[in-house]
Length: 233
Image (tube, rainbow, N blue to C red; front, side, top):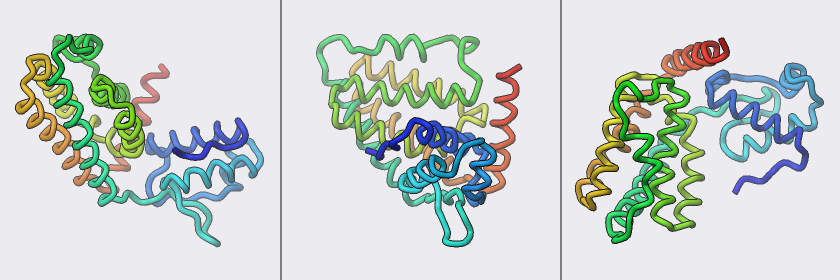
């Protein structure tokens, strides 16, 4: 578990900068200094430094002796490994759910995903959250708390890149269709078919991650800004 900062202001700054990285206001390679960030946020450098070193420990930032801070580049090998671990954990969860004889605790997932096309979410930011919630709920329903904890940690680690998937309209529609099929297969205790679809579903997302370029990240920053502006009007 990540170490928590000692003061509330450091926590606020940590969350603020992390959100800017996740929303692509800060892109991989972007540079800044503690002084610049302190001036922008209107705080002293001490809580700034605490927050930035916490983000460095988590792999989001890098620091140079003379060059200041920069957003860390994407480590695609690490993302591949995290996606592989995700497949293992979620596959175990699906197998366990399909083996249960009691009624499955999936009412909330059915209400969210077995819906008409005109009731589907279209906002990429909200869709990313819904997608996370679907997969986390499957693991939670399986009842293994240690697997749930590890799964939540890796979900946090891939969030920054996973949400790019939903800037494409066809990926939103595909996610709804595939989640609905996975749920129906689990409810029918069709473990083999559910596992094949789940693994294909996650592998496709993993493949989309591999296509990301710096140009796409700049486009993503613009799309996220437009989404934020639209939500505020």
